Length: 171
Ligand code: NI
Image (cartoon, rainbow, N blue to C red):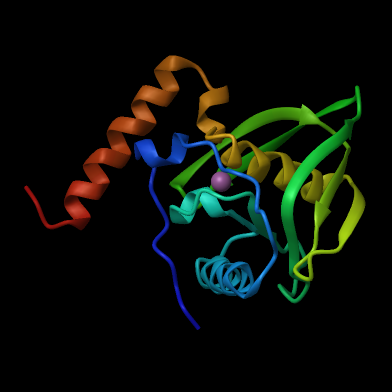
């Protein structure tokens, strides 16, 4: 088991755009396993490679209550989104202790490769749809707080910078 360091907003590395995975090989499988360990340890329901400073299109998600249904998405793409929208209170491992309502399409269809490099499609609604869109944003270098007002975002940014300093033992 290997835990990866999760970048914290407003770290500029969270804004890097991830590149597609060229081949699902042992290196990618190791990244997936470490990302899953990191997500479960947090605990969180989803993690994008961008958040652990790996800029390749890889997501791990588990929205099950028992946290026993790992879903892996390599090179994911949204191929359809419902016109109907829904608002959820979102949080993020890169934005600790902040939650806010974000409106997104209620349903999405996503195409991706699994951990064996096999292509699949999934129709998602509810928390899985929210999570997929949130994590896909990460791969584009977008953090959910960027949907919020400039004022809110600035406040979150300042609080998290202060928190990071305190954690580092600075005064
Ligand atoms: Ni996030």
